[in-house]
Length: 301
Image 1 (cartoon, rainbow, N blue to C red):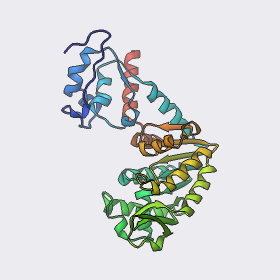
Image 2: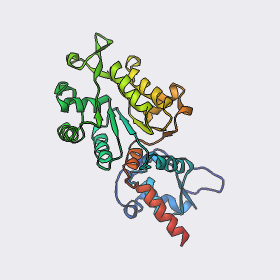
Image 3: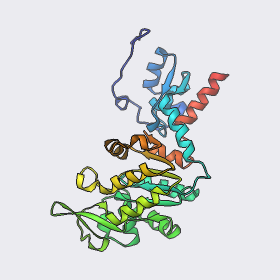
Image 4: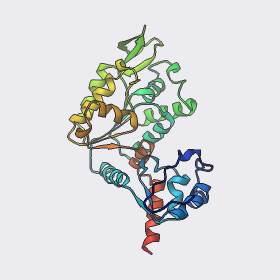
């Protein structure tokens, strides 16, 4: 294959290439066919995939070992804006977490609390349900659908014991009953699908968010694919838009909702990353950033 000057080569999804899904050090993934076959055709590698910056895979970091490499504009903006969020003097620093991907998110909570980053952790969605189960407020059946349940429920119980005043859980619920949204107390969920936080919780969470110096939100408060269960997510996003502090929304679902509500220009930063953004907030160095820094040193010398 040859590429002439001025031409653009568009590849199929890189996950289809052999070795792309392998996660290994830069020098290892740089030997994968996707890197070795393509790099001789090009003069520069520009990586703008911040959302994948925490993955040590061939298409993400492999080219940095064999080509002059730089960050794209999106990557640059993400790192600049998220660096403001990690300023240690900004408090209250409030984290709003919902959605699924519970095993990943509970580890992030553990790390953020461990370094003293978050003053309040407001939980909804599946991860909120997990902590309610851990506290003994709702039936265990609401947690059994979560991946790695036996492991994460143990961590949730430990975190609740260690940080009882920091982790804030739903105080009421919205369930689906006979095909409709029904708002009720937690002891009235009666095994029905728990699909959103209730109005009292939404009001409490919104008040805390509005008073933030930093507010970071990732994941919806409920099953927002059904319009009647978007209430909690909408109220939290409205509070984020009203907040005078630094506000960041990360992850595709909540970002899409903020766009649908016309709030993008009222939020400090809409992050393109989910897992990468969360890892950055914990102070963990992203493998792509490390790889680009190493490439920069190589280019300077």
